[in-house]
Length: 314
Ligand code: SF4
Image 1: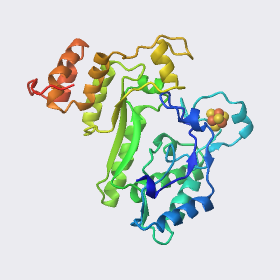
Image 2: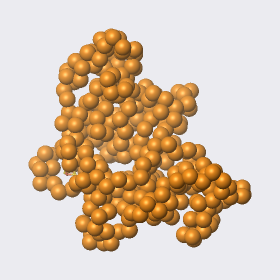
Image 3: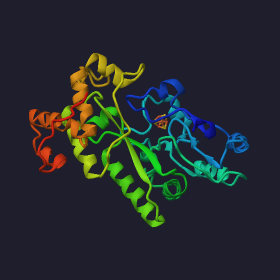
Image 4: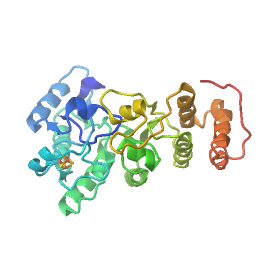
């Protein structure tokens, strides 16, 4: 995978609470020149095992290439940890045209049949309405070309949760935006006669996430016909906001107390909701739903089928 991929930039201005990329690589994007990218793409195309497909034209986030604040002086004084949360900064240039130009130039090289985007796409960036007609038109074009030309069957995106409370703590956009992107993805596929899959990533036990949030996540993703695969349980990572909350129990920006599932039992209880469709977890999930006062979700998850306790696993 990595062997036939090309990294376009470093850094990330998303500032997600659980992610340490901006601490490692910086919040300001360092983008490679077009010449440098094309030089590497040509080298990849000459590799003896290369079959014509670039596996990723990406970076820490797929679509931050050549982006940043329009007024650098404002950025220099800025204390915001994220340029995207709670709302994209009005000073942020979200024009996807330089990135589209790279995709098209790479695909035009001899020996390259197609380039895929394997890195996670920030749809909050490509769906953001700036009010500038030329930028908004270009970004719509980006979404369209991304979905039609650069998905190797499955497009990875990271809504990370469905609960807006948890998402706000994560510094991620509302789940409503994921619904919007999924609609666009499905419509574009339909128009193109394609049956590609959208693969959403989710995290359990993030600070602020209760078992009831995971129960809602299970019901919401079931309603969207997802059988989740790309999931992870929160792991504290040095230099992140989420880790500070995890260890102290307080949000350092507001001083508010924040619940975090820290025991093995609490974490496992949350994680099981990802796999509501696995009969081995059904009895435990039903017990949890009754305990947390959400028996209404039992029929949303399991219909009227009786609980199945066999084959329980941890
Ligand atoms: S001013 Fe805006 S674009 Fe610049 S660093 Fe701050 S949030 Fe990001």
